[in-house]
Length: 333
Image 1 (cartoon, rainbow, N blue to C red):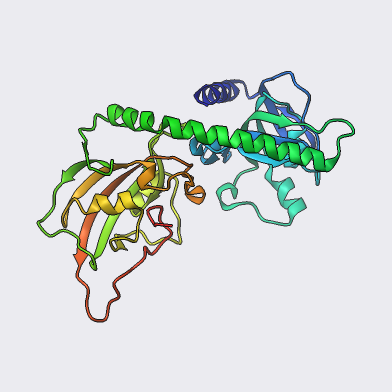
Image 2 (cartoon, rainbow, N blue to C red):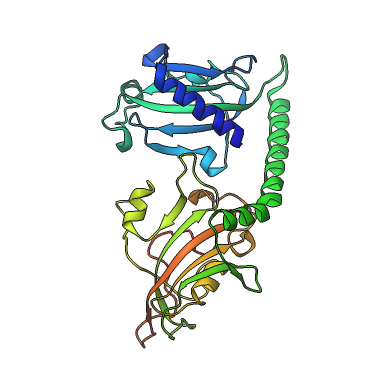
């Protein structure tokens, strides 16, 4: 995977220097950085692709490399010249390329306005690596091909999950070393560094604990920045490209037992005003299921920086359990 990222970004840097795009239908622009020399993708093929989607001003919208989740999908019939399927017909297995989809063409044929992130752009920019193309054999029945594809990609997925599981301990060890963390470890396997102990008042069952926190994956993003998936701090959300205008950025309420086990355990180690950095192994997080909507893959260890801003005691009117006010990643499923 790292090799793939290096190839793509080296190609992207070269592209910036020469800007040598070919013109395609519907205002499409594309450049193939590396060709695998294989047969081009056709309608009905099933593909596995890694990609980076950016605005024309080079702001990353989504990267499957950062998420560790290649996309698998059947290639459909093109709806118009220069649409996403039309682009894929240009490439084959092993190819890496950058292409620009014309947003005006997309808007014209879809009847939908430009996405907010691209409102002032002419193009939406993708850098892709075609990891696998599964082709239907001549005369092969649709049912046979679909069964073959399902079995292939299920096996491929299981192999990916096994690699993620086997690599977890190494990810944690590397993260600790790279960040020069002097961690302590609890009986559960939680690793932590207390940055500020806080007061003697610690959370107990029934309290509402007001927390500021930032959660990130242990791997850096392709641009070298922290791979943040959730935060209660507005400035951090904006810097990480995770800002949501609908979210309320402020200390968020938790009660013991309402979050994933590692998160719950972490903030109970400090008092009011305390700050802690904690590394949560997947067994104390989202385990083998992950949290796909937050970009957390199976067997992903997590890092959280947590601060207890306040501890509120229950009153006769207040309930004992308060869920976070946004669908934050620490929420227990």
